[in-house]
Image: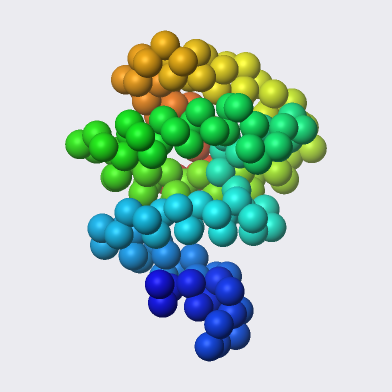
Length: 157
């Protein structure tokens, strides 16, 4: 894939911001696999990971922990195939890094992430485990909207 040249620095100088720009553009144009590349860069970039990952990492869980694996499976095997799934994921890729950045700037970020896990992510995980996909989706959207109102600014999810 030619998009990876900026991420890995092949043929040109390594430039993660440029890589993110092209992955995002490709994802928005319908190349779903580019979302996985974008997620990987965001997760590994300084200050730029998504809400569930940031929450798990703040609680000393690994990137391969049960919770993250289940949420990724939910996204890739169910949400992505819903009528509004791709648009929700695209919007999430826009708002989530901003939310995480602002939470990380708070002096009590660990407490905020603990509260996110307790109030939103564990209940969502419970819904996933019971195959109650729509309930998980609804609560996750609620979480993103609530966090966006508190930490994200004017963007609406």
